[in-house]
Amino acid sequence: MGEIRTIPPVLTRTEWNALLDHSLIKGASFIVYSGSGLYWALNGSTGKIDYSGSNASTVISGSLSALTSGRTWKEKITLKGDFSFTDELLLPSYTILDLTQAKLTLANATNKHLLRNSDSANGNTAIDLIGGILNGNGANQSVANGLIEFYKSTAIRLIDMIVYDGYFHNITFTNQCSKCSVVNVESYGAGVTGLSGDGLTIAGSTDSGTEPHDIQVLGGFYHNCTSYGIGIVRVDATYVIPYNITLLGAHCYSNTSYGIEERGRWNKIIGCHAYNNGKHGINMGNPPDIVVTYDEVIGNTLYNNASVTAGYSGLYAHSNYSQFKDNIAFDTRPGVDRTQAYGMYINYDQYNEIIGNIGNNNLTAEFFIPAIVTNIVKNNLGYKTENFGTSNITTTSGSIVHGLAVTPTIVNITASGSASTMYMGSFGWYPSGSAGIWVIQTGSGTVGFNWKAEV
Image (cartoon, rainbow, N blue to C red; front, side):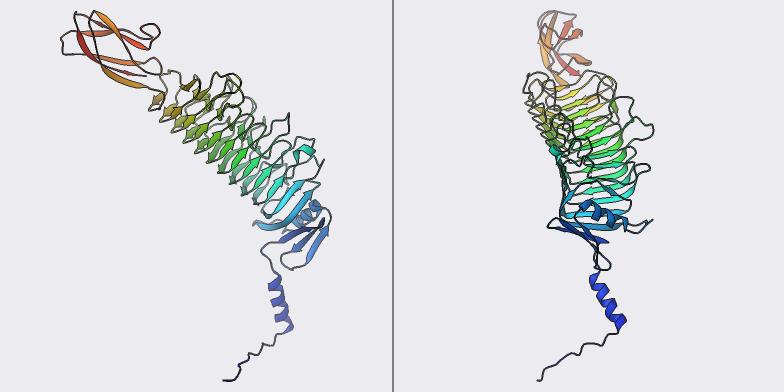
């Protein structure tokens, strides 16, 4: 059988140009490349180099400025290669910055942010930062700027990034930031020596009505910072209160101060790991003026905290109307003065639920929970709140050890096998040095009884 050949179609000039244009269209409005100290911005629609030069900040800023003006949809800029920034990069609304194949470094003595939103007066919206490695080069800066900072901005997403060595905080959301997500980000090494830097900080200010709110942190690793791994912060009671913040599954470890600092309200800390931190694993509130309220602290794992400084615990809370459930706290051991090393320390607060937590091998005690009647405290392993048993007395009175963590508030005594009437003389620390219940009978002889005690 003979060879079959296809005949290529004859294309008009218009058809050929259309085909060529289609082959040059990229998945981003601009792709910025780096190499040999130079940077090129390729136009994603024409396939042509629109900007080039030796200054990464200038080339990328030119690309950002060339995006569609006044747009209400997102347009993407992709960076590929190694970029050194001598100025901060200002991000406009409706922008995707794809850094998946890029590393960004703040050049020596730049003394500015690396990335921040462009409109500092009114804020921005709908900005995505995806992937990438960001080096703050903090040792070679001298001004306390955050590495990434968003101000009055909404619908910001940080996804799959590695951020490290910021001179101050690595990532900051402040003043009215809302509907923001930080997903699977690793942030470490924030804060130079002598400066308190957080891996991620969500910060209130003194401006009324500027509370950051509705922000979620999903997964990620926040570690080796000079202050907190994650901070939901306000300096004192005059500052506005961050609220509706959710931390889910974050790992906060080996930070100089707290793994997680929480000074807001209506917030959730769920399924997080806080360990090897110098002070508290999780700190909530700051007595006497900052009391957090309506928080949920559920299913967290806290261990080997207070590893540097005395007087700290796995979890410390100054909180009202909050839930502490199903947390595990173990191996809390300060390295300076081995005192005050509790698994969980609940301050003298009220209207809290403290249920189903586990404490083990914490140096001072598993829990410190004051006996306040408005708190619900039960089923905590390592902190007994209910006990019962049988006993007897052979004289007119005697004592039993109730075995509870603190003085009970309810005690029931019922005589068994005898018509004698029994009642409590008192309960608390009876006999001297033991946690006991003093029991008295009206009759004489040996009388058995059942007892039950509850906190």
